[in-house]
Image (cartoon, rainbow, N blue to C red; front, side, top):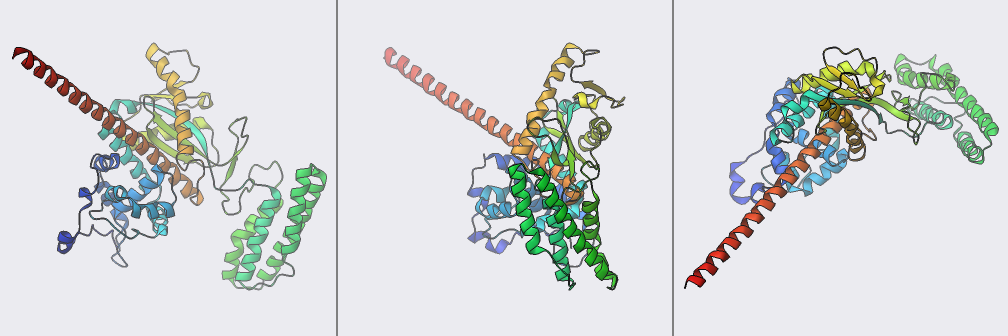
Length: 453
C-alpha cells in the first residue's frame, strides 16, 4: 500500500504536550525543516505504490528525514533510528507532532526504501537540498551557472585484496554453500587453509617472497580441488542447485585463472564490482571502489551534481554527462565550467570549459574563478571525512550510485545548517548591540535630566 499519513488523534490532544512547545524554535534544524518541500517526496515516491495490498508504507517525510539525518551526521541505519528516539529536534524534522517513545521503524526498512526509490529517488533528495540552499539565501541562482567539476574514488567497504585472502574467502563461501545444499565434499580443507594462511602471512612479514608465492600456489590448488569436486557433484543434481552455485563458481574460476597484471581482476568476493583505481597519490597508490564525479558551485561549494561511473572511464568522457545532470537537477544550464588537467580532450562545445593552467582566452574575472577551482578538493575531503564517501557500505553498483547522491545531499545540508547558525549568531550580536545602545541612551537621558534639575 501507499505511505500512511501523519497520525493526529484529536482525542489525546488534551493529554499530550506538542513538541513545538518543548523545543527552541530558533534551532537550525527547525529552520532547515521549513526550507524543504516535503510534499515533493509524496508526489514522486507515491507513484511507486500502486498496489493496495499489504501494510501501509512508512511516511515519505519520515524516510527522507532519516536519510538526511543519517548523512548529515555520518551515521548507520541502526544509529540514526536509535538516536531519533532520543532527540526531539530530529522528530520535529521528520514531521512528528508529539514526542515518540518508540523507534519509528526497523533499520532494514531504510534499505528497502532505497531499493525501491533507486538512483532517481535519491536525485530528488539532492534536488531538495539545492532548493533549501537557495531558500535560505546561502546559494544564489546565478552561482549555479559557474561550476567546478572533479572526480574522486568512492572506496568500497572491502578489505585490502590479497591472493591468499581472496582464495580463502571463495573457498569458505563454497564450503558453506555445500553445507546448505547437502553436498558432501571429499575434503573441505578448513584446517589446511587456516595453516597455509598463517604461513603466507609469516613469509610475507619476513620478506621470504619465494616461499610466500609457493604457499599461495599450494592454496590455489586446494581451492581448485574444491571447485572441481563441486562441479562433479552438480552434474547429478537438479537445476535449482546449479543456480545456487552459478555465481560462486564463476567468481572462483575468475579468481583461479586471473594473473597479476590482468585488467579485469576480482578484488572482492562479496562485491565483485570493485575496481582498482590509481589516482597518482603518493601516500595511497591504489584505491578500491568506483569513480565518482562531483559538480560544485565555483563560489560557495554547494554540490549541484553527483554521479558514479563504473569501469573507470576517462575524466573527459564524463564531463558532458555531469553537466547534463546539473541542468536536470537545477533547471539551470551552466555557462562556465572549471576542471583540472585530467579533462583535456573533453570535446564540450555548448559550455565554456577552462582547464587549470590555461592562459588563452582567460580574462581577469575568469582567472579569479579558475583559481577557485582548487576549492573543490577540500569539499570532497569533507564528504569523505564527514560523510560516507570515504567508505561505501551500500551493496552493488546501484548502492554506489545512491551513496554518491546521498553523500552530496548530506554535504549540502551541513553547509545550510552552518549558514543558519551563522545567521542566528549575527542576529544575536545585533540584538545585543541594540540592547547595549538602548542602555547607553537611557543612561545619557538620565544624566541630562539630573543635571537639568
